[in-house]
Every structure is written in structure tokens, then in C-alpha cells.
Amino acid sequence: MDRFSTGAKFEYLLFDMDDTLYPLSSGLNLACRKNIQDYMLNNLQIEESQVPKMCLALYKEYGTTMAGLKALGFEFDNDEFHAYVHGKLPYETLKPDPVLKHLLLSMPQCKIIFTNADKAHAEKVLSRLGLEDCFEGVICFETLNPPLEADGNCKKMDDAAPLNDDQLINKNVHGYFSETDSDTDAANNVSMTDSNWQRILCKPSLEAMEAAIRIANIDPKKTIFFDDSARNIAVGKAAGFHTVIVGSSVLVPGADVALESIHNMKEALPEIWEGGEKLGSLLSSTAVETIVHA
Image (tube, rainbow, N blue to C red; front, side, top):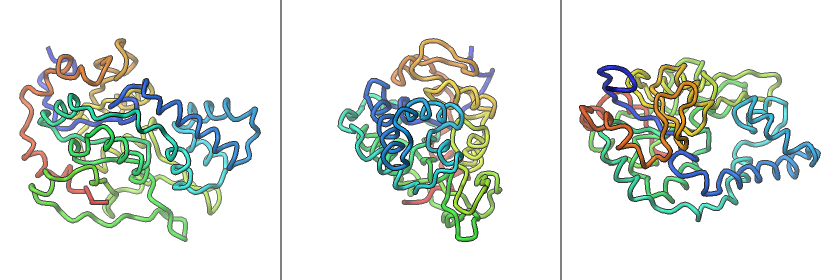
């Protein structure tokens, strides 16, 4: 029996990236946390004894430490922060994963990355794993948090020109979703306490989940959401997704299925391969018409 819902037909697969497509044991998570703490100490002059607990507290409260720092009023450039935090990561520990690549390419659904990380980091990770051509698009930090104009309003990215089926099928990781002028302001939710502060939209907020649904134009009832974070899974379920916790053999609140490894998908989720619609018909839908080339 289908664990998600009787007779469900899935059209979209939404994947977190870090610690989901590769194991936590790679060491990137630990290195990233250290780099964030170093940035807080060296660039924001936060007292060294306060940095570790502050980093953890902000992560728990705001979804990412970066979002928490912005909420507290710290001013810094987003690109500079990401370059510092990700610039010294041990990407060499990530190796091509032909098994996962084969699994992903064999899935008939439209596959999308949904990460809090920035575009450059997403490109590096997917490239190192050899998965650049496995996804129809990427929703990342820049997608959810477009830059501000001088007047404090969110800058809208250019509308994406419609792509034909061949372009969509051949598109790789360089296809990134962007907001269009027809999208609602909620996807660019910004609260301003002064002219320099922009609220960071990120998982696990329900607003970020709803923004991803709207940006990719997907039906959550026909979407499976894969993530390693119990918080993200719980909110993903609240947003209407079918949910899979990755990296755990035990179900967490809101999870429909638990996968100890992303490589176990075919054994644990045969319904993905059973009765799925053909990729071509999905790619001609509006769900991928907002993809743009970087």
C-alpha cells in the first residue's frame, strides 16, 4: 500500500542538498559551522566566548545563523558571507556518485533542488557529485532573497523566456529559478527595521516552503520532499508535501518515510518509478517555465 496516500501520483521531487545528497560524514557541515563562527569572530567582532552558543541559538531560532545575525541588526554583505563560509570547505571529500546519478536520471518526475545555500555552493556540490544534469532547476538563497533596490524594495529578477522541450531536457544545474513580476510579494517577504536590513527567507519557515511551491509552480500534493532536517520535514508536511527524512532509520514528526541513505530510494519508494508520468510531458508544463540560465 502507498505510504503517502492511496492512489497518489507524484509529478515532482523536491530535494534538499547538503547532508541529503551526500552523507553528514563528508565533513562539510562541521567545516561550514567552523567557518561561520570564524566569520562572526573576525568580521563581526563578536566576543569569542559567545560565538559558539550564539551561532547555535540563532540557527535554532531563525533557520540559519546568517538569518539570525541579520535579524539582530548585524550588517554585512551576503555574497561576502557566503564566500567566506563556503570558500574554504573541503569539497574534495565529495566524490562523483554514479549510483545516485543513475537513480535520479531513472526517475520520471521533475526533480528540483531546494537549498538554503547560495548558488555558487550549490554548483560546486552538484559538480563534485557529478549530478549537474540530474535536476530541472535549483531554488537557492538568491532565489528566495533577491537583492534590494535603493528604495528598499525587492529587486525582481527578469522574467524567464519560455523554453522549448529540448532546451528543458538538456538544461543542467545552471538553470536557477527566479521570481517573476506576477509572483506575490510574500515570496520576497521583507521586514525593514532600517534601510539596510532585509529579512532572510529560508527553511524551515513555512513562508519559504510556500515560496518554493509558488516559484516552481508545483502541486505539493503531487510532490515528495526529501530533507535531512527534522524541522524542515515537519514544516514541509505542514505545507502539504509528502515527506521523506534522509539520514535516519527512524521516522520523525511529519515524515512519511525514513531513509537511512539517499541510495535506498528505489527499495523504500518503488512508487516513484511506478505509474509516474513521462518526463517530457512534465517538462512542457508551467512548473519549469520559470527556469533561467545563470
